[in-house]
Amino acid sequence: MAIRNIRITGDELLRKKSRPVTEVNDRIKDILNDMSETMYAADGVGLAAPQVGILRRLVVIDIGDGLVKLVNPEIVESEGSEVSTEACLSVPDMMGDVTRPVKVRVKAQDENGNELDITAEGLYKKALCHEIDHLDGILYTDRAVNMRRQDSEASEEEKEEE
Figure 1: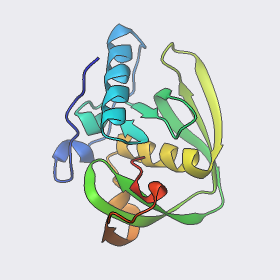
Figure 2: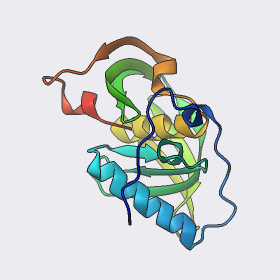
Figure 3: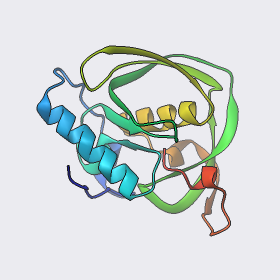
Figure 4: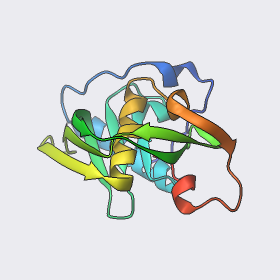
């Protein structure tokens, strides 16, 4: 495993749409492992492949309940609407309020190619939405209002990288 460089705002690769993964092989597993190590090293709760320079539909998330590795995640249902604070490893030292669904249903594959059907709320839902946006070249700043600098007194939820 290796820690990869995280791309930051201004890098044009963050604005490109990622390609689907056609086969979950050892190379894809290695990328997911590198992404996980990179996310943990940066104290994030989520990371999408474009953030480390790879235009593939891959996401890793750990909101404190264990690591989840997703291949080709797609939101297939959503309900409700709520505003909460987000931040991002690719947008250092900033945070903003973003409107997201209250609940989402996501279909994906795991690192072994098994089909997953995930229903999520709360922080897990927020992380899924945020990371899937990255796969489509969308940054949370595109959806955010009240952008502001993070300060040392920000709560853990506000400091998260989804």
